[in-house]
Amino acid sequence: MRFNKVLFAFSSVWLSCSVMAANDFKQIEYTPPEIDYDVIGRLWDFVKTNTQAPLDLPPPKLVLDWHVPPFARMGFQYPTEKFPEYPMQISIAPRTIEQYSKEMVTWGVGHELVHYAFILRENRWQRGQATFQDQLKHHCNPEFKDLTRAIADEIWRIYHSDTQRAAMYDEVEKSCFNEPNQ
Ligand SMILES: [Zn+2]
Image 1: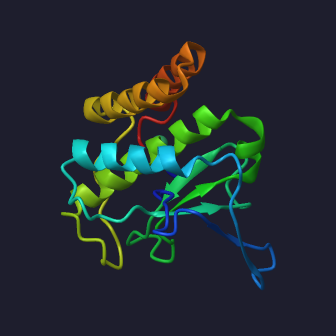
Image 2 (image 1 turned 120 degrees about the vertical axis):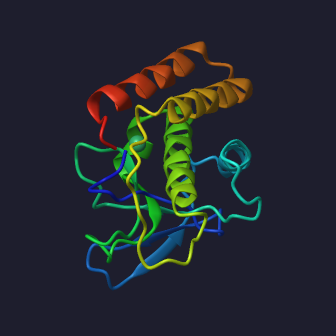
């Protein structure tokens, strides 16, 4: 999903998440055990190849974020003209890691990576901009749906859970049905 035209991302430091404490004074670094960075790294290569991204395009920052709205599990943020202060990152609610399977968290990150690639492609792969254009809608876009289903297939090739893959396919349709403007 995207929050108010904001999406979530990964840092080039794949093995740690930067976590801002609620009071913003402390920054803690740690690696949640349920995040499989090897698989996410493979998905990132898959997304780059299938969106014709520059192969050296760095992934967005991936951040555990206690401020993800209660209705969301994770999201991709980026600065726009309207919200220039937004960071470019994928934010995951810590509760998501507690409540969902490793496969589903991984698929969710894959979904956000496709948002990131689509936004950057719309902006001619210019990462250094202060703000980004986002005229295109993603969730019902046939290419977006195909790619997020293909990510479910990639995850199936690793974990072989038919049930989990069916749940991911379901999420592809739900994203389009529930949030067609994102
Ligand atoms: Zn989405």
